Amino acid sequence: MTKEERVAIFLDRLGKAAAATTAATGFRLVCETLNAVEDEHSGVPYNPAAWLDDGRLYPPQDDHARALSDGVTVYRHRGHKTFIGANGAIVIWDIARRGVVFSKRGKDGKAVPATAMD
Image (tube, rainbow, N blue to C red; front, side, top):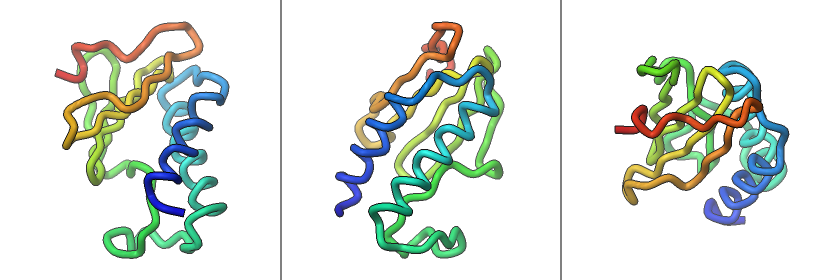
C-alpha cells in the first residue's frame, strides 16, 4: 500500500474512534492508531531509529513537543504538525499545503482553538 493509502486509513480510523478526554489520551489515540495501521499495511517493522528512510510512517514523538497557549501541545514531525488540546481534541496540519487535514473534537465537544495554530 502507498503512504497516501495508509494515511487515508489512519485518518478514517482516527475519525471513527471515540473522542479523547485529555491530552494524554489524545496523544495515545494518534500514536496507537497510526502504529496499528502501519503494522497492518506498511510491511515495515517498527524501528524508530530508521524513520528517515524505512518507508514507515511514525507517530509524533515527545522530544518534538512544544507547549502552546490555551493548553495545546504541538508535535512537529515530517511534513505535519499535530496539535492536541488539554481536552483531547486533535488537529493535524499539513505544512506544505498550509492547511488542516484532520480535526477531531475532544469528548467535551470543543476543538483545538484556532488561535493555537497561528
